[in-house]
Image (cartoon, rainbow, N blue to C red; front, side, top):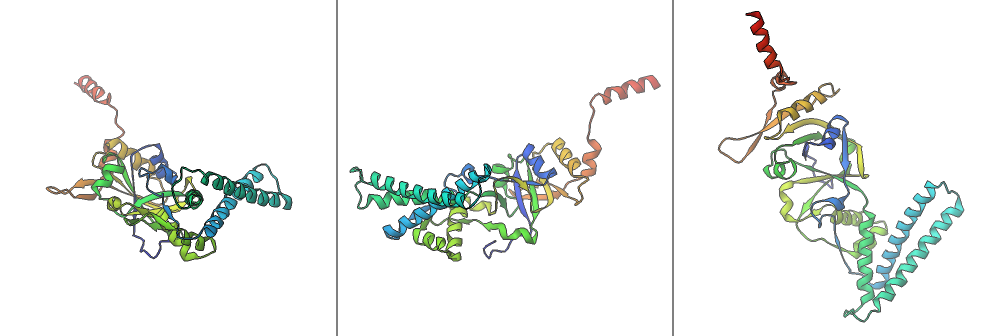
Length: 315
């Protein structure tokens, strides 16, 4: 779901050359990362604005806790092969009990006289609701850029031009999982929207999703980032690998290894290399001469000496 934004013809993934990068290329995998590992600690860290009463706030918290505990216990029961209506009833009962325990714990902590605020319980409960909200977003994210010629992206994510930039096209059935990142604004999410989301309001769900997953500081605007969201970990790619672009400092041996690794692929890949536009700070994508590259590699250094030895014998 691209949220009404027109999806670009190509998405680009800047990468340092590594085992994971090679796996992405030859095994057609993508790594859906845990957002908590992102380099910006404010990314995917929305804050709640408590704009509802104590009763609604408590209801939101109880729903979140019951949902989380139910999911955790269901997964555990499945692992040890516990089944049947009694198991479901037990899980539901334990989820409700855990929510009540946490509410009681928060009320007890709110009685601390060191809190010099009007309603410590609402303040603490709001913090717990915020934590539970962020726990709901356990998806993985693959970040992409709209362009392959951004100097900052090459320096920050392409190993200072020693890496690669991988170009993908988006099949129709994968487009619904793409989201465009918005820059600037506020990280606040109103609790009233969370209440509406839990009551089944799709518009509220989209607003909360966007605030949690798709909002970054204005300083990151140069990235022009889109996000593919799915289950965390290394997964089969739903995209079509179309091109590989090598950085200006990428070693020729790396280029050769990648070209050879992909030469028998059933869907051909196009290869490019980055060059500078003379006299400017702009970059240009140029077709890589793979014939010249493959004529030089693989190379055996001792062959040079053997060539001299052969000439002497012939003389």
